Length: 357
Image (tube, rainbow, N blue to C red; front, side, top):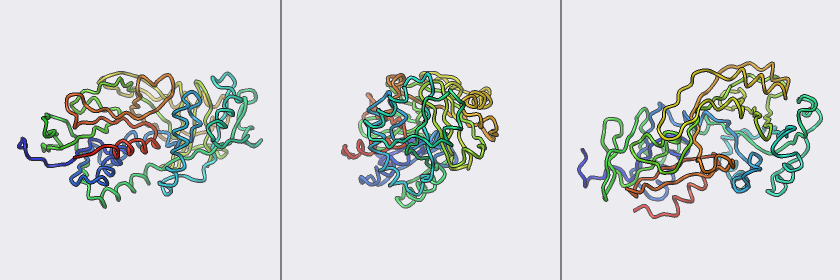
């Protein structure tokens, strides 16, 4: 056990996803010298930061959550500029409003105009990709994809340059705390930190402290497909209901297919463990091809499972704020639930708004 007075780290960040790495870097910029990241995977950005739609949101996805849409609009150009080398800039992106959607084409267009998101009618050749009568209207929009592989490479370089102590293949768990610090078991070593940041996303309940905010944990699946020629360099999202999205997945050169009905497998609250049983990839393609027939010729190359975490209070509204929860028993411990990748600016604002001494 570390001596109660012996602080070995100014901050320990548990979790080496995008939010964990950015938290560590920001703390360094704010003057904390000894910053440790403990990541149980063999590399950073291997879990939820990699296994997702890779979408850089620009507001379009949230007609039923105006505040989230406006945050995305505000952050989009900033993120694209800050991470220019990690973004797929030449993506053609389309939103198709299905007949029977919760939001009509007129409502969607008016919503985009309200938030200032670029929108125009899609060309005839794009509209022809959809089954006659299935879609009310198709729009060309400005929405991009990020490359998680390139993002990880950049962050590795930045962590190294900042002299952050990155410990890969290393699990961490909070053991005890007092008014002077927090003892954390990092691998086989007990470290004592002034502050601890739990950035483990869906694993927030598993690091030794209680998280009071109700979080829904959902086992999800995305299919990686070799797309038909008509979809190369293009992404499509069908709104708003039990539909699908298919977008380039830059790290692999494939497309990622997700489906509102078939991507979720099983959900739980609290610390219940979730495990995949079977793949829904074939069902995703079968249903999506009813709207976009060329998808029937897509080839499933891989399927990816990950546990998604959503705040219960925002589940029905589609709002996606970040969560920064300070532990009631020990104010030196913070649990952070990231949401969309562009929400990183809200986390930076929080960190910059406090004094870490």
